[in-house]
Image 1: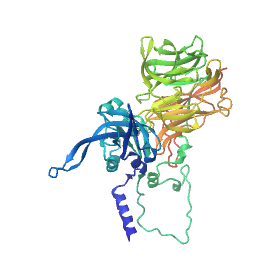
Image 2: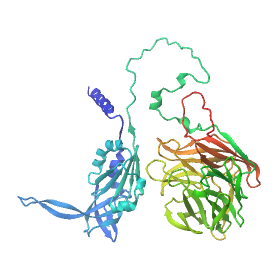
Image 3: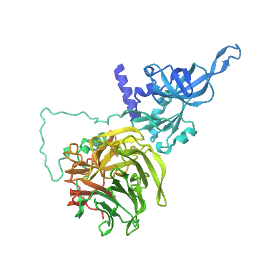
Image 4: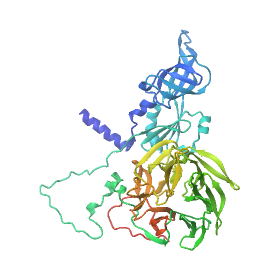
Length: 592
């Protein structure tokens, strides 16, 4: 009887609340108030009597109190207790088994030793959530967890709209980001401290109400197949599609298996991009060979070419706004001699030369066009330096406007900055030293791909290492990433290539890529995913471009160093990988 009543109650609850979130137990364990004593003080460093065994974690903030005014009963004159007087805050920077060390971040007045301290005590917590429904469901539980803090709820803000200066001015101690099935905790410097995932529980769709009759002798009815549509039994019903909206076939079946040949070049190109250089509303194509950089009209004539005349090897180029191009040039044992070029409608002219920086334009505002010039320092030890700057221009000089916070091992060639998960922050996406795709938020690693990506048939040999102990590094001319909202959900996807070589790891200096395909990096129900856009082409892909609703691919066949071979410009429909119900195959028609 009790069991049936419990089941009835659960069913009623599921009808009233069709989907609700359950916070995992570690959230309450990690974020609930925890009392401790300050047992030591040395300048700005405090020592607490609680440690790892008691649940203290790096990044926790403890509020330190001293005895306030007494609370006296008006009739009996008995001292009932003392008011709490918060006088300081300390951020935990080191955790031992039974004690922890903190750094004072705020101090109003001196306090004695020992003094009581409480984690998440009298602190300001800013809660941001793009979905108001999730806040309504979880706010009672979160208020219970942060019972000794002030929880400020904001549904109109995004993480990207916040700044450490603003949070410091408002004395915000933590930022909580509540997304779909995830909870993230940031410190006031907007550094990710912890991340939690939790399930969204939904009731099963209502089944048939009528009882099902099973025949003791079922008879198989003959089925007729009308080409080209398969039998309806193979087509999922709407209820099944709604209940299971994803398919594992999306990981193997390309979304754009069809393409059109746009043109042929009698050269083996090493880099390719498309853009409206002269801002006339019509795109130009820009492509690079080891000998020259070419600009031509799309479906038109060659406009100009630029040949680098000085010492050094051209590595790659990057298109920027209003006809600007960045050309990376390497001089062995000296460094970079990169250039900024300007297309004036007829010619490419070098405006700034001899920059000892790795240059690339990036799309920071998310409109699909590169708008910001970046420069990465050159390192004699491993080519790619530790610092990356947003650059400006004043006359014939570049200016350093802002240093970006990038992870260790970041490589500007083959990278992008895009808000993949829709939280308002730009993730840092790049190809790491092991040829894997890496996704970071500032210096916090979010995801690394299982498979290798990138690769180019053209590489340069760079001297690296300390004095008299140099060795050769192979630096590939990685294809520049593209960012676009392919499925219209407001979040960006990153388009990239994956060229395959049977002996890339054995003979890295001789790539000999045999095939290439186009992939898309997206953020879905199972986190970050690499999905196929195209199938495999016979030969490496050396460039990507977008025009209208089409994706353009530069396919190279041959040897870029001897120029024995040719290249092809191909067009594919631009859409997200998805699985369609069985039916007639789409006929691809070019967009005029």
